Image (cartoon, rainbow, N blue to C red; front, side, top):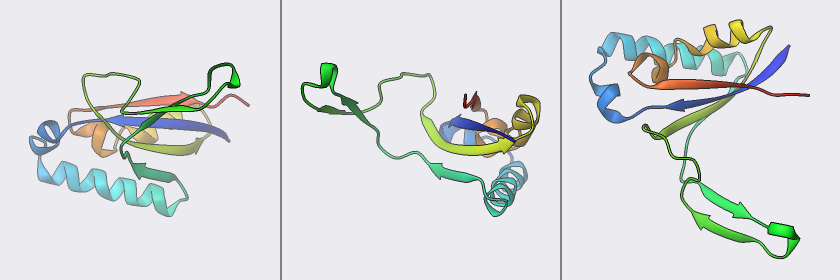
Length: 108
């Protein structure tokens, strides 16, 4: 099985305008993924780390990457193919509540 990192983007506006039944089903889907062993979490406040030329560590609060929607969470999933990974995340809250989920294959 291949491993994939997923990044969910979404905001409260999109979440709130999504039908409650759709949101509930998406959260139930996430719970089933967790029970199957998927490592999943809500995004906290990021810290940028730099150590250019190994001369000293510098940190800065906040995300480096900018996107129209804030990062909502991450998961590490296993799937037989990219197609299967896409299918797994297509029912998560960010995917159904007017957000987006990126799927990144992890190269061995």
